Every structure is written in C-alpha cells, then in structure tokens.
Length: 322
Image 1 (spheres, rainbow, N blue to C red):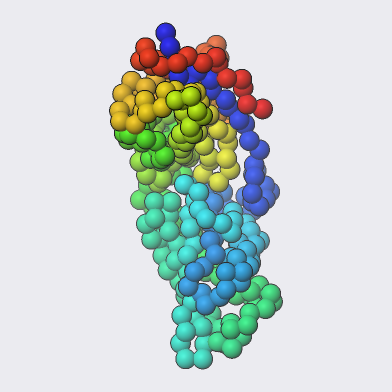
Image 2 (cartoon, rainbow, N blue to C red):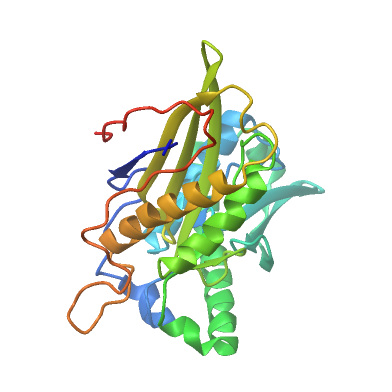
C-alpha cells in the first residue's frame, strides 16, 4: 500500500532561551506563598506604547524580566508561547510625569488584573538610562508579582483541582496552520481524536493544560510535478520549555491536497499523536501504571505509515533526524 509521511523524527530538545533553571526543585520564597511553584512562565514582550524607541523597548522588557527572575518568577522578554502568561506594559503622559500601567493576561488572553506603577519624571523618561530602567523594572516586577499572586489565589479558590493534577495529561492543541485545502481543520480535528486514543486530553484553550502542541504545515515544490509536504508538531511545557518535535514529510504529486485531505489527515494525525505521546512520556507527563510503565506507553510500537490514493508516489522511509 502506498504510504505518505512514512517517517517520524522525534527531536528531543534541551531547554533553550534565556530562562534559568534554578526554579526546578527549588521554588524559593514566592513559591512558599503560592504553596506550589508557579505553574507558568510569564512573557514580557517589548512594549509598543511606552514612548520608547524599539531598542529602548527591548532593553526595558529585558530589565523587567530580569527583575521578575530575581523575585523567582519565571519570566522571559519575548513574545508569549502558547501556555505563557503575558505582561503588557504601556505608559501615559500626565502633565510632567509618565505613569506606567501593567496588565496581566492568562494564556487564553483573558485579563487577570491591572496595576499602575510609580510615576516617572517625563524629562527622565524622554532620555532613559540603564539605571532608570532598572529602577522602573524593580517597581514593575513588584506590581506584576502581586497581580500573579492574586490571579493564582483566585484560580485556586474556584478550582481546587489546580493544586494537583490527576488523570490524563491535558494538552492545549493549537489550530494547525499552513496546510492547503481543508488541511488545517482536518488535521486539527483528527489530531484531537488521535491524542485521546493515546491517553492525552486535547483541549481548545490553554487554561489547565500542562502541555501544548503547535502544528505547522509547509508545502514546497520540488519539480517534476511533485511537492514536498512537511508537517511539524512542536510540543512545549507550561513553563515554556520546548520538549520535542515530531516531523512528518514526504513527496506527493502537486495539487493532491489542494482541496480535501480526507483519510490522509486521519492517518497523519494517528501517526503524529503517537510521537507526541512519546515526547510527553519522556518528559514524565504520562500517568504511571501500577507496574511503573506509562499507561499509554507502547514500547514496541513503530511509526506507522499513511495510506494514499493509488496515484500517489511511494517514497522510501526517511532517516531519523539527528
């Protein structure tokens, strides 16, 4: 039987980015107030309405993220990943002073609180120095940490289960993007079903999810009336660490998937879900059986293939990625 995307390459990635690791196993003072370590990472993107140049905005965001890290709040000065909380910052001019405002948003974009910072002389903010950024960032980190504490306390008061997870791992499945035809919708729907078959509860919102999967499709013409279809699934954890990637690829006749994916989406998702499950299992995210093995583990399972219509060209199994 003809097969598409016959190979699955699992790339186990080490932690990347500028997030230090001392939080692991050493939650520190703030965690004592939260009872458990913060189950999130806070993204601090450069502000766009802070009366700063692009370079100054990046420097200010980095200063705020550094100040938050000193308070043992996992933070990064970058755009948010799917499970990141976000701290939005802006400045407004009031007479001869500038007043900062900090707004906290959860991973689903829902507002969790707003706080104003200490006023800054407008003449100083017009030509900010590194020392000024540090002072304002320290004040911002205190306001942001308080917003996080209040949001976490409110979440736990309405959802006691948030204190401890049980049952299957919950995964925020982002809508697939980049596929031709109905591929985005088909792959997303089929992936949700296939993850359930592998013991993973896929959901459409980030709230409560410990993991996230981001599916991206890329179609590249390769000549001779053929095109290469690549499906990449990026799996990350709530703290922002990328855990691994599942890559599926093969060459098909040009235009074959321009309209309906049909059974191709079903088979591709079934194959990829097994790879996602293995990535989560390697990260310790799958429930354990009494004997110690993960409930959804299939140690002898090999990556499957994907059936195509008879006119599709067969390719040899791609080699594993390094």
